[in-house]
Image 1 (tube, each protein chain N blue to C red):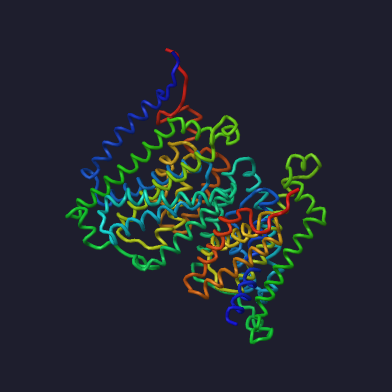
Image 2 (cartoon, rainbow over the protein chains, first blue to last red):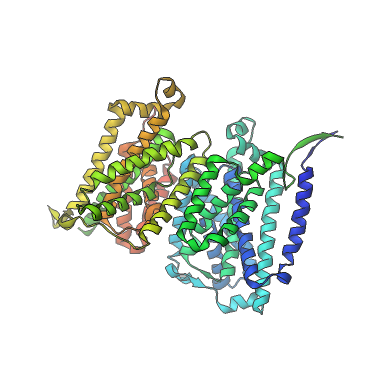
Length: 332
Length: 288
């Protein structure tokens, strides 16, 4: 009997480390202070956004520079559902994701008419259109934005501490769910197809992979996840405006740099990249514009000199994988 | 009459957009590179013009003598030093590297010139106008911009189909490997294409700086306008690009006439409508 084995020695160790880290992180309200909790939640949001962008660009070859469209859409949908329709904010997070996925269906149909490179700029136009539409919605503050009313905030939990714990746990749960979904997707037959598309689109197509359909599904699924992360980000901020919600720097530039530096086309890449990004930020953030300039230079250098990123170097040198994703035939 | 005026302003504005688009479409045609930093390079050209005007005390239009060669040199160096290494079958490297460049240029300009918006003053020409009858008048400066755009696009068309350099551009565009076999140095040809693209960017940047206020953050929107003009006009067609720019300009001025908040949104909607109904653009290059 032959069967496909996904795990390896390194992935068994890796999953063990991931499991321990999860227990420690889930208990963070016991050991971390408020500022640390906020920072951790922000890190989770970036891991989730970068992992989703990695799935889109690294695997499906859809290089979008307009994912801020769905971060902002998710945020605005949460505010609309919670303040205009009295939906409980926690329920509003998945609903915002679903609604964004519905919006993504016709958007993808339109964007996929743009070939290759032009798709990237097309996604940016979509984000701009969403931003301008959002600033026309006067019920949500128009161009200057709005805040969540106190009654909505209080409906989550009565004390401020409990609310902060709750938002933290949801952020952790969301990033675990998104990473888990990506791992499961990559282990399924669609994952095999996606990996094939990553390595050679022409090769994948000639082996019978329905490339167009898989790209479509990935685009809509990534929109769903990205919008949920966006909804959570702005639930934590309690304030939203078109410029923060649809910021290309915050939700696309950083996310791209994280993925490229960590290692595009590998699931570990965005996690490593986020850690590096936050370490750099904590040390260089005072530099302002120079900090972004340095990030840009580092990302270009990585792209030219080590296009598989930091994790790519490690994986090629030692053959490590943290998640059981490889496919190896074994005979029993 | 007000609507006729709106239409006229839109057409003239379209010339500027066509110029944003021409440089973008040129390098896409020659090397299949979409330069995400294109808009930021336009803004960089505007700032080089600003420095030139301040240092030499010349009229902005005269500063073109400095800005055009400077941008062309930057283009050649950028292509040979960085961008040539990203070209290949993979879409990702050129997009990510030019995206990184965009962030670097934006934040470099922000650091050097602050976020305050500035404008170049072209003197008396800015307020002069030509009456065209019926109570309408055309500003001399917008008219000059439009004529310059027509000249640039006509010049590009001539260069592409009537010169040895144009033949080299078309050859690498058709088949890079065969072009190399025929003795072309592709790396050099690409360098020249980027130099030419940024020379056009230089003209567009100076015109932009004279026309309106600018600051380091406005680049991406210029990229988007240029891109929309390319797609509306149809890939690979120079005169189509001019038509695309004009359609975009008219859509924006009509939008602004209806409601000031609709200015840019109307342009984007025009683009999306073309994409939905005629994704190959209005005037695609005839195949074969």
